[in-house]
Structures are given as structure tokens and as C-alpha cells.
Length: 134
Image 1 (cartoon, rainbow, N blue to C red):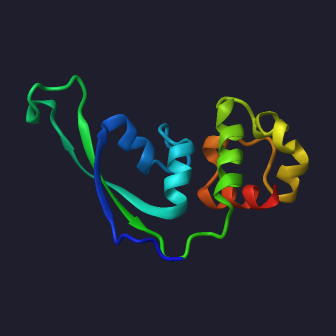
Image 2: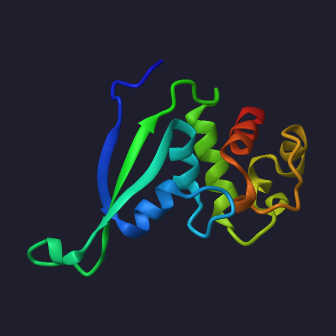
């Protein structure tokens, strides 16, 4: 089903914007990057200086442009949220440890993902594969 919007252009604190547009192996990559990457093509448009506001905030803002993906990878949003919550819940641990609560190594084996990898190295496609194997 196609989304009801053609694109969204939104402003966030820069840190949040960086998380939205992050991809695998990026320091800012996490649950938000996976969930946004599953449904949209996200790109940072530009930054807005604190001096552009009255009173100026203590943080820089960023404008992010989101375009929906016409045919996202078929995947349950609830399962994807569950998988990303487990995987990124213990960020510095290997996946075999961090996804123990939702199926552990058996789940990773079904999804054909090396249990020694860390969550921040998995692509959106691999997270969807994990979610589909739940």
C-alpha cells in the first residue's frame, strides 16, 4: 500500500537527523536508522544554525528530506521493532548475545546471519530478514 504522502521535509535536532539518515557501519546507525531506512529514502538537506531562532537553542537543527520507498521489503513492523530493540539494546555485544531473548543463534541461523557480527553492521535488508524469521 502506497503511503499518503509524496515526501516529508522535517526539522530535527542535528543528532536525531543524523540517526534518521544513518546507514550500516555509521556511528549514528541504530533503531531509528533501520526503521526509517525500511520505509523511506532519507537524506540530510541542510543544517540550521541556532542563531536562526529567537531565543537561540543550544543545539544545531537539521532539515531531513524523506521520500517513501514504493515497494519496501515485506516485513512486519512489530517484528522489525522487536528485532531492532533486541539487537541494539546491547549495542557493543555480538548478535548471538543481544538477540538471545528472541531466538538467539537459531534465529540468526534461519536468517543466514553470522552470530559474531554486531547490530551496527547489519543492513536494513538483513534486519528485515531477521524479522521475517521470527
